[in-house]
Image (cartoon, rainbow, N blue to C red; front, top):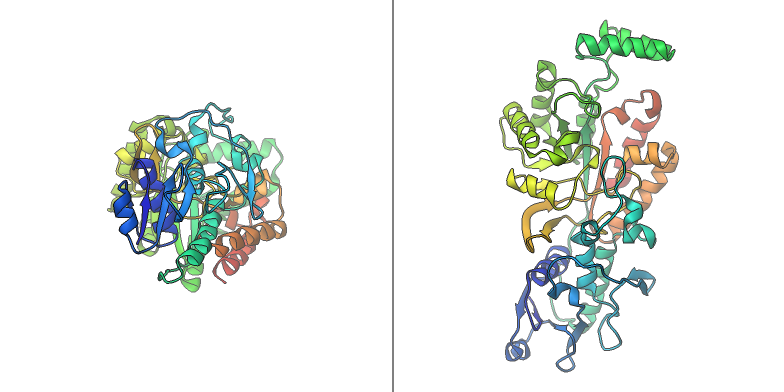
Length: 434
């Protein structure tokens, strides 16, 4: 156990010290405001305050962890052995910046509470973020800082028995459209034919016709292949199923369709199934609750995992809604427009609600990349994407973090704009688990 002395123990201090020391570095932590208790402690110990008590391991504290609410902070980026950092701590500090305050700023998504410009879908965007603007979005700097802190602790306290966590890989699959052509109602099928005809998409017309006539398999219906890869490679796989009513942004088959319900039931037998709340649930708690109950009625099991469609969420409102519905895990923490680590970490963390100043029971699982980001936003080929995937995986592996990827069943179809992406997925799996 490591004992931390500070002049005031706040919820923010408990939260971020436990995340860095216990959940990331596997070191139990305890806190005290009593100098005599701190002095008497024989094990590893850290002073976290404005000035050191003596010769001990001292980290000069920034005011952030002793404040409440959100303020517009002045942030100056510096370097800690080539790694970007901020909240400088001066020469007396064992490390040159307040690692804990900086980590809290990034993981709590403090900057997303500040005034910012949203995109057309009402989302916080990467160019608004500190990480994007200072070139460290593709590095899990919170984990990198933690491991650099560990190296310093080992020098200071060499006799302590340190544990080491293991690297993990999780493949997540979003089901926005379970089928390209099958099981659509008559109006949607006719409308699809007319649209393809009007735009002279003859290949689409032929594909649609052969699938509807059951001559060929629906290109998006590749779930057995995904399950086969999961089984063969022994990888954790989570499917997030869209179960909302039809809208301009929600174009899946109707959840009332028996074939789709049977598909979800089958997936739940062999993998983990979570909720993919529809586009408008971000501002509609009643709709979100209805969709959760709808999925639970299909799977006959509690739904505890969720990922927002279009990655649409507002902090803290969307997460507060998920907590009210007893959702335990959110997997929306990432950007649509670019790859990287939105919360600057590859370690799952509990959402800290800055409105109420509490650690919540909602665990956030940040993903590193999404297929549509690579293809549609970054305009990368499958080969170029593989290089980017390898770089991100290496960053996560270096800190024994959790590497989470987001693909869609559509992108594994080799259909139209997704030619070559199924092979990319298989190559990515090999890289991820090697």
